Every structure is written in structure tokens, then in C-alpha cells.
Image 1 (cartoon, rainbow, N blue to C red):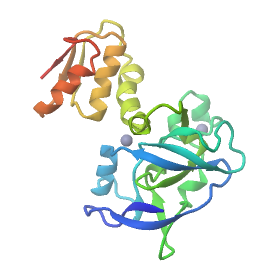
Image 2: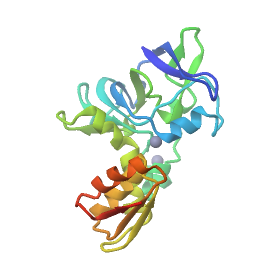
Image 3: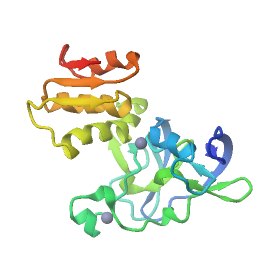
Length: 231
Ligand SMILES: [Zn+2]
Ligand SMILES: [Zn+2]
């Protein structure tokens, strides 16, 4: 399959033919239809987090299941799915404590990527995923099934930007009905924070950004005309 490989920080990704291994126990292979570009990928590509190269980034994706490993439950070939970077075992102390996003269980994929270059070298799966590619193999817990009539390009945004922005409002800040909210920055995450604030009926919602062109979108994410004041 083709994948966009990061071989050197601060350099353009290279399109290469990569071999993807069969899914092992609990893993699923997904043919991707779309992958959004998250700023975390760009920070990684720029060397902001260091790490070992080569690597395939991309972690905000959606596609169709083409193969399942042994022990996979609730996911079948043909299912339309979101692919996220969040894995959870469901039974470690963190998962039991209601915090599956910091699951402390070891996943085999972390040390043994399912990707190999044409020269036979291992290519890492950035942010546990590696979705700047035609296919991924990930743990079953990284998938969420979707209705088959849901457009996969729009769905891919649910894998990171939407849940990050909405989660900041609903889970982290626990914004209550009628609270006033200021969202600083109206990119993919910020717009979804605006949307989250509108969903919990915060008012007023003030959206700030240095880039004028982003402000009309912030108004639209407020659901009702005039709810969001964008500056
Ligand atoms: Zn992201
Ligand atoms: Zn866990």
C-alpha cells in the first residue's frame, strides 16, 4: 500500500510503498477513506516531540474494516468505523477508574509496528495509528462503528478535533448551562469548543482568533445566529 512516510523532521513526507502486516490478536485492519490533518501531526513532523523515524503519522481517520484478528468482538468486516489514537484495555486501574484515555496496559503494536518499508526496515505507527496511508492495523478499542450512510470524510473529524474541543467544554471545564465562555483560537479544536459551549447552552460565547477569516465559521458553530460573538 501507499503511505506518506516521515523520514526526516522538518522535511516533506515521502510517498512510499509500505507492507502492512495482518492484524494480530485483538487487532483490525481498516481500509481508510479519509484522514484529517491534526496539528499534533504537524508538531511531530517538525520534530517538536522527537521520537524515532521513519514513521507514518495521521490519527484522525475513518474507513471500512477489511480484516479482523482473533479475539475481535463487536467489529466485523464491512463495518464503517472511526479510527482514533485512543486505546483502552477496559480492565487496568486507569480504565477501571473511568479514565480509559490514559490506559496503562501495554499494547504489542507499540514496540512491533505492523508497517515495513520496501527495504525491510520497520516503520513506526505515529500516535498509535499511522493513518496517512491507504490502510491501518490498530487495536480494536481504537475503532468506533458508524452508520453506513455517514460520510466518511466528515466522520474522520470525529476521531480527534471534535472530541478534543467538545471534551474540553463538557469534561475538562465542565461548563454549565448559562455560563459565559471564551474560546481562544478558532481552528479545528476551537470551533468544536464553540460547538460544545452552544450544546450545553452557555451564553454568551465569545470566540477569539487572530485570523479574521476563521470568525464567520465560529458564528456558524454556535447553532443559533448571534449566539457567538467572534473577534
Ligand atoms: Zn489530533
Ligand atoms: Zn486499560
